Image (cartoon, rainbow, N blue to C red; front, side):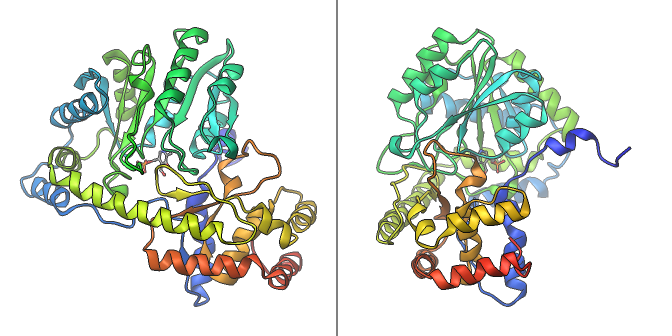
Length: 435
Ligand code: PLP
Protein backbone atom coordinates (compact mmCIF):
# COMPACT_ATOMS: atom_id res chain seq x y z
CA UNK A 1 0.00 0.00 0.00
CA UNK A 2 1.32 3.46 -0.85
CA UNK A 3 0.36 6.79 0.68
CA UNK A 4 -1.04 8.19 -2.53
CA UNK A 5 -3.67 6.83 -4.87
CA UNK A 6 -2.24 5.25 -8.02
CA UNK A 7 -3.92 7.84 -10.22
CA UNK A 8 -1.79 10.64 -8.79
CA UNK A 9 1.13 9.32 -10.87
CA UNK A 10 -0.80 10.41 -13.93
CA UNK A 11 -1.37 14.02 -12.95
CA UNK A 12 1.05 16.42 -14.65
CA UNK A 13 1.97 19.98 -13.81
CA UNK A 14 2.72 23.33 -15.37
CA UNK A 15 6.37 24.14 -15.93
CA UNK A 16 5.53 27.83 -15.61
CA UNK A 17 5.16 27.11 -11.89
CA UNK A 18 8.02 24.60 -11.47
CA UNK A 19 10.70 26.86 -12.99
CA UNK A 20 10.04 29.06 -9.95
CA UNK A 21 12.15 26.72 -7.79
CA UNK A 22 15.17 27.16 -10.07
CA UNK A 23 14.67 30.93 -10.02
CA UNK A 24 14.57 30.84 -6.22
CA UNK A 25 17.85 28.89 -6.17
CA UNK A 26 19.51 31.53 -8.36
CA UNK A 27 18.14 34.40 -6.30
CA UNK A 28 19.19 32.70 -3.06
CA UNK A 29 22.77 32.84 -4.37
CA UNK A 30 22.35 36.59 -4.88
CA UNK A 31 21.80 36.53 -8.66
CA UNK A 32 19.44 39.00 -10.29
CA UNK A 33 16.96 37.17 -12.52
CA UNK A 34 15.10 38.77 -15.43
CA UNK A 35 11.82 36.88 -15.47
CA UNK A 36 10.73 36.33 -19.04
CA UNK A 37 8.95 33.15 -18.02
CA UNK A 38 5.85 34.78 -16.59
CA UNK A 39 2.36 33.89 -17.74
CA UNK A 40 0.63 36.93 -16.33
CA UNK A 41 0.39 40.60 -17.24
CA UNK A 42 2.88 42.81 -15.42
CA UNK A 43 0.04 45.30 -14.87
CA UNK A 44 -2.19 45.43 -11.79
CA UNK A 45 -5.96 45.14 -11.92
CA UNK A 46 -7.64 48.51 -12.58
CA UNK A 47 -8.61 50.75 -9.62
CA UNK A 48 -12.33 50.67 -10.54
CA UNK A 49 -12.26 46.85 -10.34
CA UNK A 50 -10.39 46.87 -7.01
CA UNK A 51 -12.85 49.39 -5.64
CA UNK A 52 -15.87 47.27 -6.57
CA UNK A 53 -14.44 44.33 -4.60
CA UNK A 54 -13.58 46.48 -1.56
CA UNK A 55 -17.00 48.12 -1.52
CA UNK A 56 -18.72 44.74 -1.66
CA UNK A 57 -16.67 43.43 1.24
CA UNK A 58 -17.52 46.61 3.16
CA UNK A 59 -21.26 46.10 2.73
CA UNK A 60 -21.05 42.46 3.82
CA UNK A 61 -21.37 40.79 0.42
CA UNK A 62 -19.24 37.94 1.72
CA UNK A 63 -21.53 34.92 2.04
CA UNK A 64 -22.21 31.76 0.07
CA UNK A 65 -23.96 32.51 -3.20
CA UNK A 66 -25.42 30.63 -6.18
CA UNK A 67 -22.88 27.92 -7.16
CA UNK A 68 -23.54 28.70 -10.81
CA UNK A 69 -22.45 32.31 -10.25
CA UNK A 70 -24.44 35.35 -9.15
CA UNK A 71 -27.11 36.34 -11.64
CA UNK A 72 -25.89 39.95 -12.14
CA UNK A 73 -22.47 38.67 -13.27
CA UNK A 74 -23.92 35.93 -15.47
CA UNK A 75 -26.22 38.52 -17.07
CA UNK A 76 -23.27 40.78 -17.66
CA UNK A 77 -21.20 37.95 -19.19
CA UNK A 78 -24.14 36.90 -21.38
CA UNK A 79 -24.49 40.46 -22.72
CA UNK A 80 -20.74 40.76 -23.26
CA UNK A 81 -20.38 37.46 -25.15
CA UNK A 82 -23.59 37.94 -27.18
CA UNK A 83 -22.50 41.41 -28.30
CA UNK A 84 -18.88 40.48 -29.01
CA UNK A 85 -19.67 37.51 -31.23
CA UNK A 86 -23.13 38.49 -32.42
CA UNK A 87 -24.68 35.37 -30.88
CA UNK A 88 -27.49 34.70 -28.41
CA UNK A 89 -26.12 33.55 -25.06
CA UNK A 90 -28.37 33.43 -21.97
CA UNK A 91 -27.28 33.65 -18.32
CA UNK A 92 -28.44 30.10 -17.63
CA UNK A 93 -25.77 28.78 -20.04
CA UNK A 94 -23.02 30.39 -17.97
CA UNK A 95 -21.16 28.97 -14.99
CA UNK A 96 -18.78 31.18 -13.02
CA UNK A 97 -15.59 29.39 -11.99
CA UNK A 98 -12.55 30.12 -9.87
CA UNK A 99 -10.20 31.23 -12.67
CA UNK A 100 -10.44 29.73 -16.14
CA UNK A 101 -8.68 26.45 -15.33
CA UNK A 102 -11.61 24.55 -13.75
CA UNK A 103 -13.41 24.50 -17.12
CA UNK A 104 -10.60 22.29 -18.46
CA UNK A 105 -11.06 19.62 -15.79
CA UNK A 106 -14.84 20.09 -15.79
CA UNK A 107 -15.04 19.51 -19.55
CA UNK A 108 -13.00 16.33 -19.26
CA UNK A 109 -14.93 15.08 -16.22
CA UNK A 110 -18.31 15.90 -17.76
CA UNK A 111 -17.87 14.64 -21.30
CA UNK A 112 -14.92 12.23 -21.54
CA UNK A 113 -14.84 8.57 -20.51
CA UNK A 114 -11.63 6.55 -20.10
CA UNK A 115 -10.62 5.36 -23.57
CA UNK A 116 -12.29 8.28 -25.38
CA UNK A 117 -10.05 10.34 -27.64
CA UNK A 118 -9.33 13.99 -26.94
CA UNK A 119 -7.81 16.13 -29.68
CA UNK A 120 -5.67 19.00 -28.43
CA UNK A 121 -2.96 21.40 -29.67
CA UNK A 122 0.71 20.52 -29.21
CA UNK A 123 2.60 22.57 -28.19
CA UNK A 124 -0.20 23.73 -25.94
CA UNK A 125 -1.21 24.57 -22.39
CA UNK A 126 0.13 21.59 -20.35
CA UNK A 127 -3.01 21.24 -18.24
CA UNK A 128 -4.87 19.71 -21.21
CA UNK A 129 -2.64 16.64 -21.43
CA UNK A 130 -2.42 16.43 -17.66
CA UNK A 131 -6.20 15.91 -17.37
CA UNK A 132 -6.39 13.67 -20.44
CA UNK A 133 -3.87 11.31 -18.85
CA UNK A 134 -5.39 11.60 -15.40
CA UNK A 135 -8.76 10.38 -16.66
CA UNK A 136 -7.35 7.57 -18.78
CA UNK A 137 -8.50 9.21 -22.01
CA UNK A 138 -6.45 8.90 -25.19
CA UNK A 139 -4.38 11.96 -26.10
CA UNK A 140 -4.57 12.84 -29.81
CA UNK A 141 -2.25 15.82 -30.37
CA UNK A 142 -2.52 18.12 -33.34
CA UNK A 143 1.14 18.97 -33.89
CA UNK A 144 1.36 22.66 -34.71
CA UNK A 145 3.86 23.70 -37.35
CA UNK A 146 5.96 26.84 -37.43
CA UNK A 147 5.44 26.99 -41.20
CA UNK A 148 1.68 27.47 -40.57
CA UNK A 149 2.36 30.13 -37.96
CA UNK A 150 1.49 27.46 -35.33
CA UNK A 151 -2.17 27.66 -36.35
CA UNK A 152 -4.35 24.56 -36.01
CA UNK A 153 -4.66 22.96 -39.44
CA UNK A 154 -8.23 21.95 -40.35
CA UNK A 155 -6.98 19.26 -42.76
CA UNK A 156 -4.90 17.74 -39.97
CA UNK A 157 -7.89 17.90 -37.64
CA UNK A 158 -9.92 16.08 -40.32
CA UNK A 159 -7.42 13.23 -40.32
CA UNK A 160 -7.56 12.93 -36.54
CA UNK A 161 -11.31 12.92 -35.90
CA UNK A 162 -12.41 9.31 -35.38
CA UNK A 163 -15.52 7.55 -34.07
CA UNK A 164 -13.80 7.60 -30.65
CA UNK A 165 -13.26 11.38 -30.63
CA UNK A 166 -15.21 12.94 -27.77
CA UNK A 167 -13.61 16.32 -27.15
CA UNK A 168 -11.65 18.73 -29.34
CA UNK A 169 -9.68 21.45 -27.58
CA UNK A 170 -8.80 24.70 -29.35
CA UNK A 171 -6.89 27.62 -27.92
CA UNK A 172 -6.78 31.00 -29.63
CA UNK A 173 -4.90 33.27 -29.00
CA UNK A 174 -2.60 30.45 -28.03
CA UNK A 175 -0.23 29.69 -25.21
CA UNK A 176 2.73 29.23 -25.82
CA UNK A 177 2.89 30.39 -29.46
CA UNK A 178 0.71 33.53 -29.58
CA UNK A 179 -0.99 32.16 -32.72
CA UNK A 180 -4.49 33.42 -33.47
CA UNK A 181 -6.93 31.34 -35.50
CA UNK A 182 -8.53 33.23 -38.39
CA UNK A 183 -12.22 33.24 -39.25
CA UNK A 184 -11.38 31.03 -42.24
CA UNK A 185 -9.56 28.54 -40.00
CA UNK A 186 -12.55 28.40 -37.67
CA UNK A 187 -15.10 28.09 -40.47
CA UNK A 188 -13.28 25.14 -42.01
CA UNK A 189 -12.88 23.44 -38.64
CA UNK A 190 -16.54 24.03 -37.81
CA UNK A 191 -17.78 22.53 -41.06
CA UNK A 192 -15.44 19.57 -40.66
CA UNK A 193 -16.57 18.89 -37.08
CA UNK A 194 -20.22 19.13 -38.18
CA UNK A 195 -19.63 16.72 -41.06
CA UNK A 196 -17.50 14.13 -39.31
CA UNK A 197 -18.08 14.44 -35.58
CA UNK A 198 -20.80 12.54 -33.72
CA UNK A 199 -23.48 14.95 -32.36
CA UNK A 200 -22.18 14.27 -28.84
CA UNK A 201 -18.67 15.47 -29.69
CA UNK A 202 -17.90 18.67 -27.80
CA UNK A 203 -15.44 21.46 -28.55
CA UNK A 204 -13.64 23.17 -25.68
CA UNK A 205 -12.60 26.59 -26.92
CA UNK A 206 -10.04 28.10 -24.57
CA UNK A 207 -10.29 31.85 -25.07
CA UNK A 208 -8.53 33.21 -21.98
CA UNK A 209 -6.38 35.52 -24.12
CA UNK A 210 -9.32 36.80 -26.18
CA UNK A 211 -8.72 40.41 -25.13
CA UNK A 212 -5.09 40.44 -26.27
CA UNK A 213 -4.93 40.53 -30.07
CA UNK A 214 -2.60 42.71 -32.16
CA UNK A 215 -2.42 44.56 -35.48
CA UNK A 216 -6.03 45.74 -35.30
CA UNK A 217 -7.26 42.15 -35.69
CA UNK A 218 -10.29 40.77 -33.86
CA UNK A 219 -10.54 37.61 -31.82
CA UNK A 220 -13.11 35.22 -33.28
CA UNK A 221 -14.73 32.33 -31.44
CA UNK A 222 -15.49 28.96 -32.99
CA UNK A 223 -18.71 28.99 -30.95
CA UNK A 224 -20.03 31.70 -33.29
CA UNK A 225 -19.45 29.61 -36.42
CA UNK A 226 -22.39 27.76 -38.02
CA UNK A 227 -23.55 24.72 -36.05
CA UNK A 228 -21.04 25.24 -33.25
CA UNK A 229 -23.08 26.88 -30.46
CA UNK A 230 -24.72 23.53 -29.63
CA UNK A 231 -21.31 21.83 -29.26
CA UNK A 232 -19.03 24.44 -27.70
CA UNK A 233 -17.87 25.03 -24.20
CA UNK A 234 -16.18 28.42 -24.20
CA UNK A 235 -13.62 28.77 -21.44
CA UNK A 236 -12.76 32.30 -20.44
CA UNK A 237 -11.40 34.18 -17.47
CA UNK A 238 -10.63 37.65 -16.21
CA UNK A 239 -7.02 36.66 -15.52
CA UNK A 240 -5.23 37.80 -18.66
CA UNK A 241 -7.47 40.31 -20.44
CA UNK A 242 -8.19 42.27 -17.23
CA UNK A 243 -4.84 41.59 -15.49
CA UNK A 244 -6.69 39.73 -12.69
CA UNK A 245 -4.65 36.51 -12.41
CA UNK A 246 -4.68 36.34 -8.61
CA UNK A 247 -8.42 37.06 -8.33
CA UNK A 248 -9.25 33.58 -9.66
CA UNK A 249 -12.35 34.48 -11.61
CA UNK A 250 -13.42 32.81 -14.83
CA UNK A 251 -16.44 31.40 -16.58
CA UNK A 252 -17.65 28.80 -19.01
CA UNK A 253 -20.34 29.29 -21.62
CA UNK A 254 -22.06 25.93 -22.08
CA UNK A 255 -24.17 24.80 -25.07
CA UNK A 256 -27.38 24.89 -22.97
CA UNK A 257 -28.75 25.27 -19.44
CA UNK A 258 -28.82 21.49 -18.85
CA UNK A 259 -25.10 21.09 -19.52
CA UNK A 260 -24.43 24.15 -17.36
CA UNK A 261 -26.02 22.42 -14.36
CA UNK A 262 -23.35 19.68 -14.62
CA UNK A 263 -20.59 22.31 -14.33
CA UNK A 264 -22.48 23.89 -11.39
CA UNK A 265 -22.54 20.50 -9.69
CA UNK A 266 -18.77 20.27 -10.11
CA UNK A 267 -18.49 23.74 -8.53
CA UNK A 268 -20.62 22.53 -5.59
CA UNK A 269 -18.36 19.53 -5.18
CA UNK A 270 -15.13 21.52 -5.22
CA UNK A 271 -15.33 25.13 -4.01
CA UNK A 272 -19.12 25.77 -3.69
CA UNK A 273 -19.08 29.20 -5.31
CA UNK A 274 -16.73 31.95 -6.43
CA UNK A 275 -16.55 34.71 -3.78
CA UNK A 276 -19.42 37.18 -4.34
CA UNK A 277 -17.31 40.32 -3.89
CA UNK A 278 -14.93 39.02 -6.56
CA UNK A 279 -17.85 38.28 -8.85
CA UNK A 280 -19.04 41.87 -8.37
CA UNK A 281 -15.54 43.04 -9.34
CA UNK A 282 -15.84 40.92 -12.49
CA UNK A 283 -19.15 42.64 -13.25
CA UNK A 284 -17.43 46.02 -12.88
CA UNK A 285 -14.63 44.84 -15.18
CA UNK A 286 -17.12 44.04 -17.92
CA UNK A 287 -19.47 46.98 -17.41
CA UNK A 288 -17.28 50.00 -16.65
CA UNK A 289 -16.46 51.53 -20.03
CA UNK A 290 -13.21 52.92 -18.65
CA UNK A 291 -11.84 49.36 -18.79
CA UNK A 292 -12.05 49.40 -22.58
CA UNK A 293 -9.43 52.16 -22.63
CA UNK A 294 -7.38 50.59 -19.80
CA UNK A 295 -7.25 47.27 -21.65
CA UNK A 296 -6.44 48.96 -24.96
CA UNK A 297 -3.51 50.78 -23.29
CA UNK A 298 -2.22 47.47 -21.90
CA UNK A 299 -2.49 45.87 -25.33
CA UNK A 300 -0.64 48.75 -26.96
CA UNK A 301 2.24 48.08 -24.59
CA UNK A 302 2.20 44.36 -25.35
CA UNK A 303 2.18 45.11 -29.06
CA UNK A 304 5.08 47.56 -28.78
CA UNK A 305 7.08 45.01 -26.82
CA UNK A 306 6.22 42.27 -29.29
CA UNK A 307 7.43 44.45 -32.16
CA UNK A 308 10.68 45.16 -30.35
CA UNK A 309 11.45 41.62 -29.22
CA UNK A 310 10.58 39.82 -32.45
CA UNK A 311 12.92 42.07 -34.39
CA UNK A 312 15.65 41.80 -31.76
CA UNK A 313 15.39 38.01 -31.58
CA UNK A 314 15.63 37.71 -35.34
CA UNK A 315 18.92 39.63 -35.17
CA UNK A 316 20.49 36.96 -32.98
CA UNK A 317 22.39 34.37 -34.97
CA UNK A 318 20.69 30.99 -34.71
CA UNK A 319 17.24 32.37 -33.88
CA UNK A 320 14.15 32.76 -36.00
CA UNK A 321 10.96 34.11 -34.52
CA UNK A 322 7.60 34.55 -36.18
CA UNK A 323 5.38 37.43 -35.13
CA UNK A 324 2.71 36.31 -32.67
CA UNK A 325 -0.71 37.82 -33.31
CA UNK A 326 -1.99 37.66 -29.74
CA UNK A 327 -1.45 36.69 -26.07
CA UNK A 328 1.83 37.87 -24.54
CA UNK A 329 4.35 35.28 -25.61
CA UNK A 330 6.93 34.89 -28.33
CA UNK A 331 8.03 31.45 -29.39
CA UNK A 332 11.42 31.70 -31.10
CA UNK A 333 13.03 28.75 -32.84
CA UNK A 334 16.47 28.37 -31.23
CA UNK A 335 17.65 25.29 -33.12
CA UNK A 336 20.55 27.29 -34.58
CA UNK A 337 21.78 28.25 -31.09
CA UNK A 338 21.48 24.63 -29.93
CA UNK A 339 23.63 23.52 -32.87
CA UNK A 340 26.27 26.18 -32.30
CA UNK A 341 26.57 25.33 -28.59
CA UNK A 342 26.61 21.59 -29.36
CA UNK A 343 23.50 21.21 -27.17
CA UNK A 344 22.24 18.26 -29.22
CA UNK A 345 25.25 16.12 -28.30
CA UNK A 346 25.04 17.28 -24.68
CA UNK A 347 21.32 16.48 -24.51
CA UNK A 348 21.72 12.93 -25.78
CA UNK A 349 24.62 12.27 -23.39
CA UNK A 350 22.76 13.66 -20.37
CA UNK A 351 19.54 11.85 -21.36
CA UNK A 352 21.52 8.59 -21.46
CA UNK A 353 23.20 9.23 -18.10
CA UNK A 354 19.97 10.21 -16.37
CA UNK A 355 17.75 7.77 -18.22
CA UNK A 356 15.18 10.43 -18.99
CA UNK A 357 14.80 12.74 -21.95
CA UNK A 358 16.51 16.11 -21.66
CA UNK A 359 16.10 18.35 -24.71
CA UNK A 360 18.73 20.72 -26.18
CA UNK A 361 16.37 23.64 -25.59
CA UNK A 362 15.91 22.65 -21.92
CA UNK A 363 19.68 22.73 -21.49
CA UNK A 364 19.89 26.15 -23.12
CA UNK A 365 16.98 27.37 -20.98
CA UNK A 366 18.83 26.29 -17.82
CA UNK A 367 22.14 27.69 -19.04
CA UNK A 368 20.43 31.03 -19.68
CA UNK A 369 18.93 31.02 -16.22
CA UNK A 370 21.87 29.85 -14.14
CA UNK A 371 24.68 31.58 -16.01
CA UNK A 372 22.98 34.69 -17.46
CA UNK A 373 20.10 35.25 -15.00
CA UNK A 374 17.36 35.10 -17.65
CA UNK A 375 14.32 32.95 -16.98
CA UNK A 376 12.41 31.58 -19.98
CA UNK A 377 10.56 28.32 -20.62
CA UNK A 378 11.65 25.42 -22.78
CA UNK A 379 9.22 24.98 -25.69
CA UNK A 380 9.17 21.25 -25.08
CA UNK A 381 7.50 21.70 -21.73
CA UNK A 382 4.38 22.56 -23.79
CA UNK A 383 4.63 19.30 -25.76
CA UNK A 384 6.17 18.26 -29.01
CA UNK A 385 5.59 20.43 -32.06
CA UNK A 386 5.03 19.53 -35.67
CA UNK A 387 8.54 20.27 -36.90
CA UNK A 388 10.95 17.45 -36.06
CA UNK A 389 14.29 18.39 -34.55
CA UNK A 390 13.31 22.02 -34.11
CA UNK A 391 13.61 23.54 -30.66
CA UNK A 392 11.91 26.58 -29.12
CA UNK A 393 11.77 28.79 -26.06
CA UNK A 394 8.72 30.58 -24.74
CA UNK A 395 9.64 34.15 -23.93
CA UNK A 396 6.99 36.21 -22.21
CA UNK A 397 6.59 39.89 -23.08
CA UNK A 398 4.81 40.61 -19.81
CA UNK A 399 7.87 42.56 -18.64
CA UNK A 400 8.98 46.16 -19.04
CA UNK A 401 10.81 46.98 -22.24
CA UNK A 402 14.05 47.67 -20.29
CA UNK A 403 13.93 44.12 -18.92
CA UNK A 404 13.23 42.73 -22.37
CA UNK A 405 16.29 44.59 -23.63
CA UNK A 406 18.45 43.15 -20.85
CA UNK A 407 17.01 39.72 -21.64
CA UNK A 408 17.83 40.03 -25.33
CA UNK A 409 21.35 41.16 -24.52
CA UNK A 410 21.86 38.09 -22.32
CA UNK A 411 20.39 35.69 -24.87
CA UNK A 412 22.67 37.17 -27.51
CA UNK A 413 25.75 36.63 -25.31
CA UNK A 414 24.70 33.15 -24.20
CA UNK A 415 23.98 32.11 -27.80
CA UNK A 416 27.66 32.30 -28.70
CA UNK A 417 29.19 31.30 -25.36
CA UNK A 418 30.33 27.82 -26.43
CA UNK A 419 32.90 27.48 -23.64
CA UNK A 420 30.48 28.66 -20.97
CA UNK A 421 27.84 26.21 -22.18
CA UNK A 422 30.26 23.29 -22.27
CA UNK A 423 31.42 24.19 -18.74
CA UNK A 424 27.78 24.20 -17.63
CA UNK A 425 27.28 20.75 -19.16
CA UNK A 426 30.38 19.42 -17.38
CA UNK A 427 28.97 20.72 -14.09
CA UNK A 428 25.68 18.87 -14.75
CA UNK A 429 27.53 15.67 -15.54
CA UNK A 430 29.62 16.02 -12.39
CA UNK A 431 26.42 16.39 -10.35
CA UNK A 432 27.35 19.97 -9.39
CA UNK A 433 24.55 21.64 -11.32
CA UNK A 434 20.84 20.99 -10.90
CA UNK A 435 18.61 21.00 -14.01
N1 PLP B 1 -5.76 28.45 -20.64
C1 PLP B 1 -4.57 28.90 -21.06
C2 PLP B 1 -4.21 28.69 -22.49
C3 PLP B 1 -3.68 29.53 -20.20
O1 PLP B 1 -2.49 29.95 -20.65
C4 PLP B 1 -4.07 29.72 -18.85
C5 PLP B 1 -3.15 30.34 -17.88
O2 PLP B 1 -1.97 30.47 -18.07
C6 PLP B 1 -5.33 29.25 -18.46
C7 PLP B 1 -6.15 28.61 -19.36
C8 PLP B 1 -5.78 29.36 -17.03
O3 PLP B 1 -6.22 30.65 -16.74
P1 PLP B 1 -6.60 31.07 -15.27
O4 PLP B 1 -5.38 31.63 -14.64
O5 PLP B 1 -7.71 32.06 -15.43
O6 PLP B 1 -7.08 29.86 -14.57
